[in-house]
Image 1 (spheres, rainbow, N blue to C red):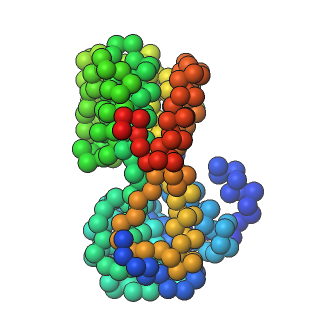
Image 2 (cartoon, rainbow, N blue to C red):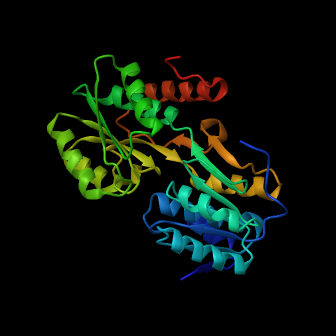
Length: 316
């Protein structure tokens, strides 16, 4: 069922916590497709909050559909969006690369946006977080806080830039550290993620960067139960246990969606692949555990500010 969000009070929103430009005209209405649910409290929820930010900022009607994980469902949803007057559609994930590249030519009056991929048509944009740096700073935290000199990253895919960043950051901070890297090969496979986490724990890891949105909450809960440390992902996950969650690498998807809507509304949204980083205020580190020394936090924050100004990481 198509979910319609009428114009709602700003108070409610607050409670919810390249090639040349191709967009034509003002923003009319906005659609959001999510592969699973907006209620996962991580990735899907971030996209939903971004949709609400757009609704509030531009005073437009917005719609969303959940469970959009195949081309037939996506095409049907876009047909529904089109009848409603939607001219900007967000596909909330990398899976929409093939769907949007396939169907977008049939909807020249709609601009399509998705994450982490390549585009083929002039009305499609791919958004990419420059996540190498956030991985590097997470690695610095892990390298500082490990007692066993053995840290891990439980990532979804080998192509994630934060994997190399984490390895480099941990080694920069602690030359004696050993970095254990395992891949779930899926964003949401909780069973496999916990199996791999068990292996890491048996191998002596005491800090794990849980770099996958669908399984990071149960993985962090397991680490907490084992008396080990975690670094959160996508959202600030300090609420899962400030003693266990050393910090989080936060991707402000809601801010990015609002930024993209502004570009579209100003006829400045480019097709092709766009990249965003700390400098764009859409990536940050979350709240630090009180176990992390304040002097180190200040040192890390100084390194982040320098990176924002120069584009250079501490090891460069």
